[in-house]
Amino acid sequence: MTMIRTERKYIEILRILKEHNDPVGAKRLSELMAERGFILSDRAVQYYLSYLDTMGFTEKIGNQGRILTRAGLDETDNALVDDRIGFVISKLERLAYRSTFDPATSTGDVAYNLSIVPRESMEKVKFAFDEVVKAGCGFFNSYRIIERDPRVPSGSVGFITICSISMDGVFQRKGIPVKMAYGGRLEIEQGTPKRFKDLIGYRGTTIDPLELFISSGLTSISGYARSKSGIALANVREVPSSAKKQVEETISLMNACGFVFPVVMGTQVFNLPANPFRLSIVAFSGLNYIGNTVEHGIEITTEIGAGNIQFSKVMEIN
Image (cartoon, rainbow, N blue to C red; front, top):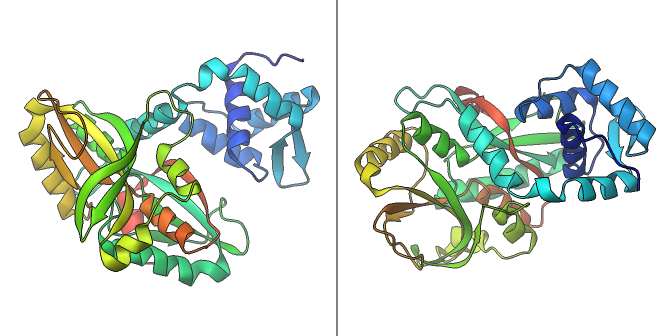
């Protein structure tokens, strides 16, 4: 087996290519690398890609960009076994750190997810997204449709939804320690949340737990949207109990901006273990938009935590 150089820049490029099914160009790679803390010019990225081509780990697909070869996939898996642990939460924490949103003024950047759908499916996707808005099970009560973006292929449109990790960024800027603890399937009966059917911790996982639930067909978001009974996606965050008053004030400000949370908050919620020193905040996930679309049988590709964007851009009229 050929060993790849151990520089993190090469590792991150391989990691990004593995996360994408389609070819990724140098410009987009440069943007994604910047989100991970590596500031590289398009020309520098081209240099690294040329080296990876030479090693047989990547392949250029015309003018579309690069993909991983079979050797590249194997090398990525072997080279990153130790490094992959905690990758999901690390990415989310970076996005939270870069979120500058101030709910008092409704200004600043929020983290977002980017979904790509065929143009002919746009109205069906809007219907699925609007169902989530009306049911009140999205993290934020609106979304943005984009067309003129280099990441949106010809014949497709993009849907931007706010990622719930934005909440963590707001809390952190107010000096409130916050921990993203779990992602889970929340059972709801006649409009009343009852219990978590499943919970997966974010620490030490290499895939977003909620993405796993969606791909496994373990949600019933459309059922909840229609009848107020179903299974929706939610996250659990933990903050110190002593920060309760400040947390409540912050949540109130965010609610006024259109954010929809919490489902419930307390030292003992649903079937979670009680902890008098930690306050659990349960919030619906922005991925309910995606999950409901998948339940409707619509083709959709989503980049979770695609980056940060000005809050005002999300609020622009579609």
